[in-house]
Amino acid sequence: MNTMVRTAGGTPASLDPGESGAPARAGAARAPDVLPPGSKAGPWIIEREIGRGGTGAVYAVTHEAIGKREARIANLVEHPCMPDVFATCRYDLRPYLVMERLAGQTLGARLDASPLPRDEGSAVPRELCEVLAAAHTVGVTHRDLKLDNVFLLARPGVDGHRVKLLDRGLATIASESDPLSGMIAGTLTYVAPEQIRGDVVTPATDLYALAVLAYQVRVGRPPFAPAVDRTLLQLHLTGWIVE
Image (tube, rainbow, N blue to C red; front, top):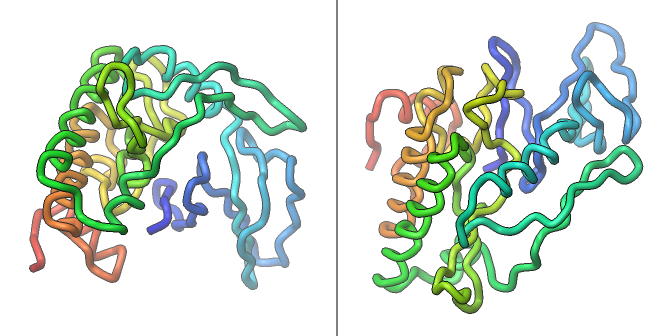
């Protein structure tokens, strides 16, 4: 399922999987203007157009400050399950990060191949608890914990850990303003009720997503998996479980 960001009272737009940032949507009664790659719409930098209709266009975009925030978060959270960021730079208006190279696969890819053995299935959530606790201690909430943002190293590190927590592009820092405040920022399978309501996210937001992820690892599917996104959001809000 694609990452979704919904502005308060607005219309949802999809991001390509793996893209950091939020969507920009141009809607008007006349034919929409074309926004070339590299141009800016407020704080959003246009990556490319990913869809167009009769009254609007959808673009993949990156928030100009998110790359720097991700690097700062990596430096704030000192834990072996957090990938190192060596530099943050900009090329042709595009921010980028220089990060450590990892060998292995995402937890999502691993589960697609086969279920985890019981011991490993317990170790992964345990290591995630450790790195999330380290993040929460310094005021960082990840906000987008999911299978594809958890990386399993091919070999344990020198400290014995095998998990790396990826993609801090949607993370919040408690002492700073949230550039995605009032939006549903996250992946719908894992979003907590406060994310759906547009409330302030807290460490509890990550714990909710961790519970969903741990359920997936054990059972082989998420606790809620309806075909319609609206139903999925309602299930997160009410706790009704569909078997």
